[in-house]
Amino acid sequence: VVRDIDKGEELHRVETGPFTTGVWAIAHIPFRRKSGKVKSEVWVGTSTGEVLRFGAKDRVTQPSLARHTGGVYCLHFSALASPAPSVFSGSNDFTVVQWRASDPPKGSKQTGFFLRQFSGHTNGVRGALALGPKLWTCADDTTLR
Image (cartoon, rainbow, N blue to C red; front, side):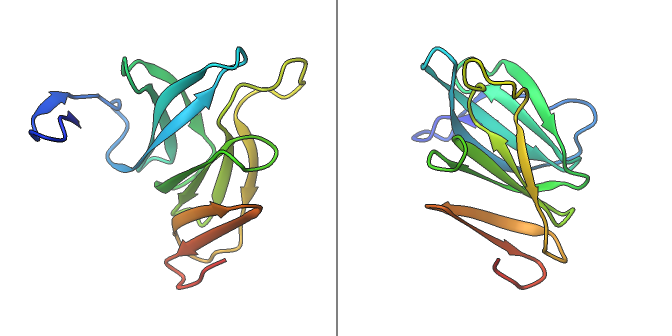
């Protein structure tokens, strides 16, 4: 649901699809296009493990991202992540996935958005925070990594 902050009124309702039983995380992503322009997107973590993408202004569905085998609890954007601006998704499959938040560079052989997957937690990952070259994560296993 998209609301007017001042009035609290519902402005729009965005459907997430027939297979999603819950929406667990949401984040604003300034997605960088090959042209250099930035397209504002909203990324949504779902109970099925899929990350849905929508245009922030037009609410048009973009291609979704699938890598997790459990629901996505958290999403965090970092403009300074290496090798590209990135989104980190934490899941109850005990992993964190790093997604590219930009089109691949011109001439690159890379396709898609998946960059890498981090493991090590022994329970669901509830939070992720990129600080400079470090990625902090917290999980239901009571650890920070």
